[in-house]
Image 1: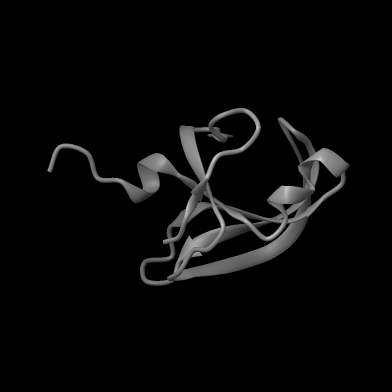
Image 2 (image 1 turned 90 degrees about the horizontal axis):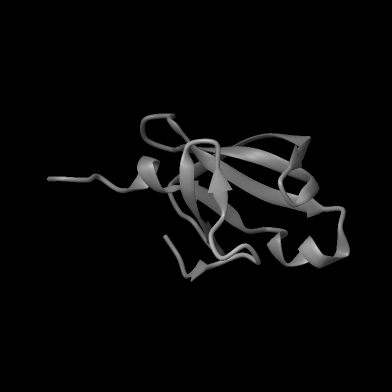
Length: 88
């Protein structure tokens, strides 16, 4: 998937819990861009889906409106429970 980069809150949070911020991700498809109010402010994001099964995995930051959040632009957040299988 790519190098894991933690955000300023130590660990990105999704509605379902823990998530990871990646510089690169493969085997994903991006949905349409939209503005969303997230915990860290207003961002333009696109949901990302598994290119195989179509399941939503997280989102990609397209634009950050707050200068302190600009480092997230172009990065992908993947929800932990969507990408890790527990108790194999």
